[in-house]
Image (cartoon, rainbow, N blue to C red; front, side, top):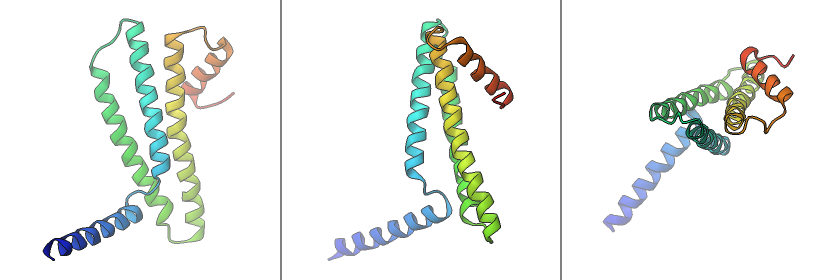
Length: 143
């Protein structure tokens, strides 16, 4: 009898916490999983590139932790903006900003993977693509 009461209380507490977390903190777990995969691919290709260029050391691994924490904080801010605007105009703008923020994170990780790939095998991508990516990374412009 006692254990069933404890299980019921624990379940109710967890369910309440889960609902509050989804409402106030973050709820885009499918995106978070995809972003985590991109971070792992970026890290793996970065390690590979560093190994190939005899530049492997432990200090960049601390940057991965920092990146993950900053990405998480950024996602929480985006969630707050997208879900707690007080009128339709604000909701529209912040929903757009949420989409742009998601795209920026995925785009940054994808660009980093491409940079790492070109460090591993420089001639894999044509020179004009590498130049466009370098220019975009430096200026943010596609022109």
